Image (cartoon, rainbow, N blue to C red; front, side, top):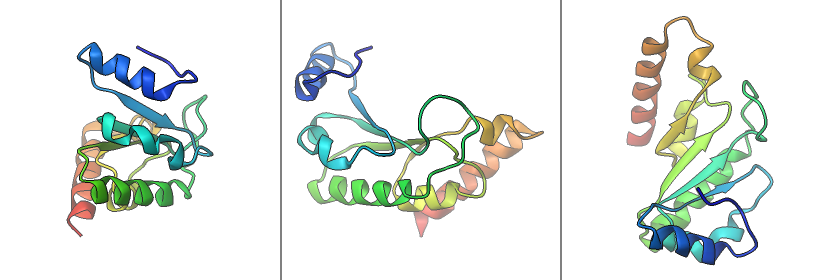
Amino acid sequence: MVTSGPHLHRTVGQIRELGKKACVVLNPATPIELIEWVLGDVQQVLIMSVNPGFGGQKFIPSALTKIRQLRERIDEKGYDVEIEVDGGVKLDNIGEVCAAGANVIVSGSGIFGTKDYAKTIDEMRKRGEAARLT
């Protein structure tokens, strides 16, 4: 695993040279403009919808705008880039997250904080797929 450094383009290139998929991560306050120049070289962008550090945090609603803007840029350029979202994704907001353009979801407490994990995952899938169809 390669971590952050001052030369994002070089780091992404090194990851790809190793035959691996490159992903960049944006924290809540990090603008998508910072990854504009590598967007065509990565396979995934992870948008953190909470500030990293501990589980169970509440979803930051402004992440929806970031997801929408990123999806628009990816689609405009014709890139094949997944948008992953991690942080505060639960049954009550997964539809909005997927409708905004996310296609990979991470949910910890949104699943493990429920009584029936399988039922919750199934319902999340249904809501996410329904939202992407609209």
